[in-house]
Image (cartoon, rainbow, N blue to C red; front, top):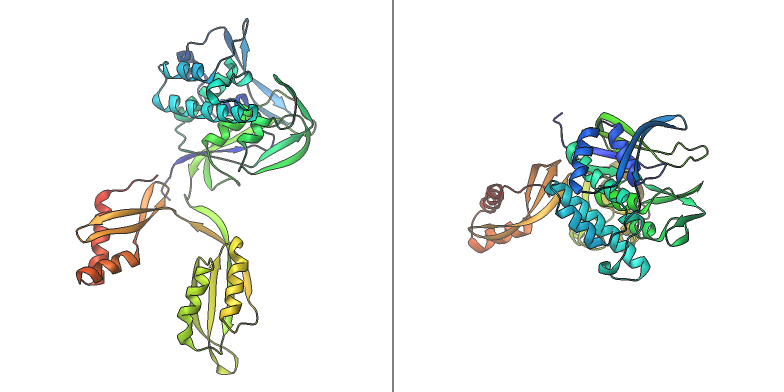
Length: 397
């Protein structure tokens, strides 16, 4: 099988923090000397790095920490962005680091009720947070990682000490950053996901869920600073080549057999069911008991549209019951574009396996109208749209 893009998957079952991310990358093979050399481009002074092998529970991993020498300086967002952009870091590192900090600033500003321009960072504006975030961007570029995925994120219980005082767990900024992200509660007393860790992972991760299909090349463990009972405080990262770049989900397949309706009515039935939210609907001729000819009506739909589809099905048909299955599905990444032909414009659906364009599907209604308007064979209209699409050389993304 042809290799696709290089990916990283973070197992966050013990939580995630900025220093744990860097520790995991180092443990997985990131060159320490290269990291140090790149971080020096920030022109930050009065700090030293601690990188050592430690044990958390039964797990050996790499611990990364920043030791500040003297008085720590806290910075505003503009100061941090200026520090990054004036450095000689690569464009990729500057862009990703700035994106993470802007996301973090937006969350902090919202929970404190001030504008982003006025937000004054404490922990996140400190030198260690800057090194964690920029270091993460350096690691992704150096390791050639093209996509990042992560597991759902855990929440601890109790309270946490913060620059603003004692706060409920998770910290308000963390909770804001994790909106829309799969999370779950635990019985662990302590902060499992820090604001810096949340800002990084929600920026770099394309999706949160199970470990994707990949050929693992390296595994790294980034040790946290806290010791939890019965939980090895380590962030695990898998780095490897994606084996099949498809998107996975599950849909419902609804079936019913009909033997007492006029087949001429099926087109209206299908139209009504599609309008109710079905993804697809089709009819298969079947032969039932007593040699009766019938039709098997199959409907594919999302779980959210189940009730609407069933209501329409029972109203429009003579069915007394249905069979419902949860069906796993894998699909190509896709996007819809509009292309210009010598006959006019038409929409086209593009399918990608990884970054490779594998499917070009002109929109039927569009090229049908082209054929009708210009009085040309429908196949000629189809080929004109497809030819124009290939000429554009659409790329993934």
